[in-house]
Image 1 (cartoon, helix red, strand yellow):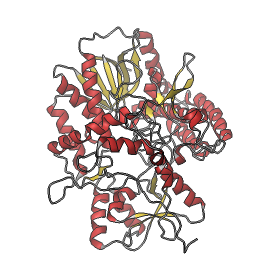
Image 2 (image 1 turned 45 degrees about the vertical axis):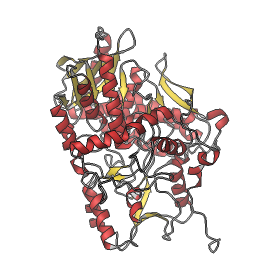
Image 3 (image 1 turned 45 degrees about the horizontal axis):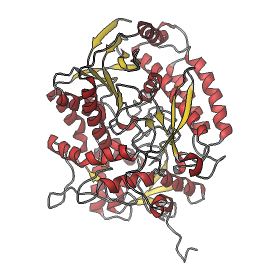
Image 4 (image 1 turned 180 degrees about the vertical axis):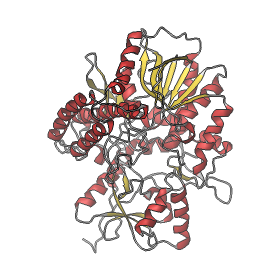
Length: 576
């Protein structure tokens, strides 16, 4: 492997949503700053928004909502276990970011007065802002990178973030997935913006890359943060979403809800009052599937033709344009029949739940000089707009941190150890393929970790994961692209183990289906009203501890605290 040495002030890892914003805002804060954006794909088409996005799920817009209302909504949706200051930092920055994106050329839906056309989907407030032409998002972001003169390196897979003698970030290591060149990038700070860990479990569709989340987002950011010594929060709070059966795209009841669509059982009956994704909503979904009233469907066939046409335009041209082709091949017409839904595989994603690399309201992790933004960070229900807002916070704060700081010497022993670890699969003529190791890991995740959670299953899973770690040491790679898959397999295995250990640590049930623990079926606020933090112990093993919930800055009364436990539609007197 040819070694390439580079030096920058700030390295941003991940070119999807939060990463480009972090890089642009760092350069705006200090134009003299040397900033490098690194992506393992190509920034022009990388990340979860590679094909655009159909709307903002969490737009806090004056006249429609206040930051305080939004903080209250997210606190209630997450059973109270949130850092409200971190949620408030998002909410307070939401409208400014929407206006900036508007100036950049992002097209948001507006009403006849020119106001943003916000829709209600959430249980309490109104925060959904459609983007009918959201497929232009990546082009707009890339244009800002060029204007800001941000340096970009594509096709480099980052595997580790190194720290110096003072415990602060001082280098990023990785390799080119086309040439296998080994990169040592010295830096003063780094921002991880690598998206969700969306490739932990196997999708029901049977396709390795047919995941609910962008399959390139495999948890490598979570793994590199863990190995750098950072805390990860609430990893037992899984992401599990409603999806279209066999397609593995979002069913988008939250998009269709404002038009009159809703989630229904096999009888066509609505059984939940709110289609906004939450653990409790998914638990009610799971219960309906198990009750004999399943399957569960997205019901649109009662809507007017012009309404369905508008829904098709939104859902079939943004984010996942293959959706329309899927329905066409199946002969599935929204006008004549309901669309079957299912439950997704598990993952880590703060965008849809509350787990990730632990950050504060400045985007700082527990490692000095290391920041995280977007779906890989721990701010709950962040979605795309949250990735933009925290990308900005991370970029600006990292730029300030770099000011006047001199990089320390890099530990060459650590560099060489990582180079040898990465290169090993290329040197094996025979061995297991990365696809075999990944498939085995993800199959075991489905067998043992998918909720409802059972202690004995999780204990078996951990034993099996240890066996796979031994197998992984025998992986071979025929070329640099397969080498990338091998390193991703290691990250997937790390995330699977984190999911298991974090789940066993929290001995209660919480967050609806996300942490539905059969052995401990009740919520236990007396012992578990806290965050769980996972980190790498001194012995190199995963260590877990409790962290108190930060004092609230927005009060929640008792009636509001249990609002999301009352999502199920009450049976009518006639039905009873």
